[in-house]
Amino acid sequence: MKKSQIYTRTGDEGKTGLVSGNRIMKSDIRIDLYGDLDELNSRIGYACSLLDTSFSREIIFLHTVQSALFDLGSNMACEIENRLNYKLPQITPALITEIEKEIDRMDSELEPLKNFILPGGTPAASAFHLVRTGTRTVERKLVFYEENKKEELPALGLIFLNRLSDYFFVLARFINKKANAQEILWKPRT
Image 1 (cartoon, one colour):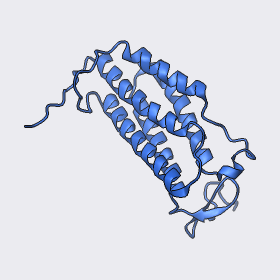
Image 2: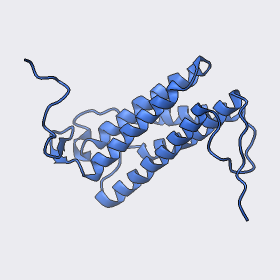
Image 3: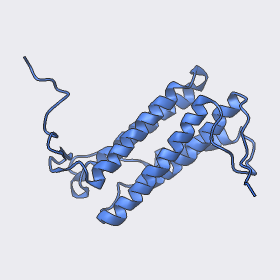
Image 4: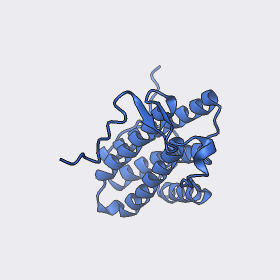
């Protein structure tokens, strides 16, 4: 019987391989970080599954975002000195600009915020609020990684994640607006 391509048994002792072939412990913060990128990508996929066809433009763009998250993850899975050797895909300034344009397009249809809002609304909007907070978590971990490993981050990785969290916030609001779901304002308890 031929062995499956899915399991390799190479990680059975708690180590995994980087793009370069070097083996490191699965507990390394690098592995934790690109595992979080993978989890974020999966959350986006789930949130997309809650959107109907009236959001086809957003779904297509979200697939671009998911691919870019894989690009960032592949860079995190490779030591900085080896990234150029493997010609890994990079986050580009054009993608950052595209995210900003999408934010501006959706935001132009929304009422300006004068108060904080509570995350929620429709199931899809609520899912994208979770995606937003997950993005912020990965962003914080990326900063922690750079500070502690003293390794330069993939170019534009932090800007990409920072812009994405803004995008997901506006997208959640946009989804709620299209569904006529009322935003609930934060009322501080006194």
